[in-house]
Image (tube, rainbow, N blue to C red; front, side, top):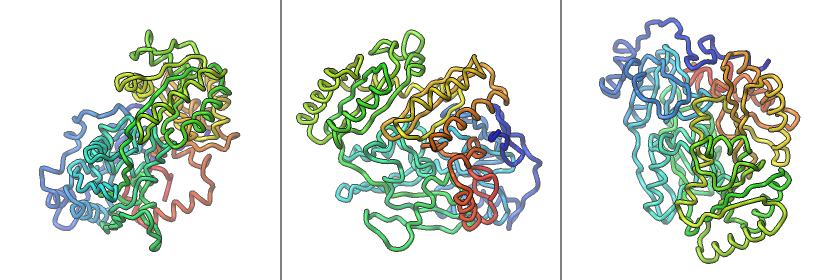
Length: 488
């Protein structure tokens, strides 16, 4: 089985998946490492591990903090000095954002120092002419969105953890979300950034231009690297014009061929205004909506698929008319079994609340996000559901996601969270993906949880190149060790 390799010997799959390794005294110039870090950031900004563990987790992502201490720098210079000290002491450092990732990307051991940028939370500039925002990495995604909104602009990267996740975290994980079909991933919305390497070297490439072919585009090394190559401290993000129109509909389909037909028609009829196309399989929708779930059901939970179509544009009158015409066309055809069109902000929010109600998944399931051809998604979900159901009859498989950009989320709830069951679930999710040549991670990243399966999506040559990059930029392997790659 591909899931047997779990880390550096300290990790295993359970809510308390970290076994503390033996401590060893670590010193740096001027005394103990913690004393040195306190001299850099202030003694009260180095929190002992016990104090960190008492903090309430923003999301229940099963990543308890076992680190010896958390360090809270207030500037890039302080981040650089902290990393230089840890590099000299050969001490592992785990960068912390909002800790909302679902792949154990922030898992820690007692040998680790946690580096949190929560004090670096300033929006430094919003340029309405250039349509850019400059911010420190500790700014929450919601705060960046609000700053753009107050300037009459729009930062389109949007995920359910927006109130907790940080800008730096979304960059480190190349976050996607619900508007990728129109605006792209985080990578598509970053112009420049500043990052600190493992030895404290600061790379400042705060580019503000769409066109800049002056040598290698080094920022791409850090976007999606999960803190393996450096710590992002500041960024320049692209903003868009704030949409003046906003239309949302919830449609029900009884056959996957109908879902594909609706997607094709939505793209043709709505053009560039189409910004969201989300699909919820019956197993997800029925669990989230009443009477079993928390959300009101605008459409009865008796259909195979539920589709959210979202459009945004610059001209309310024309856009509303185009959306109404598109819905009339869809309803008059043979592909939509039922549907509702939101008439107000509250109705739009109510529809999206169904899709975003994932708390039960985050806290109680094994979560997967894969990419594959849109045409293959239903067959793949059926194959996974059948294989898991045959082996674990008590398990419940829920599928949903950003179908318009090839991304499906799978959540498997099982009464038994034993290592054997977990291994069985992972084996079937990834084994059934292989015939479709899909990607094991669409937007969540690899972290620790998917590390053993990386070779299912990347060739040996690609993985070797990743290791070479890791060794070049972090020769002592102190940055987020054990994540993504089994060895560097």
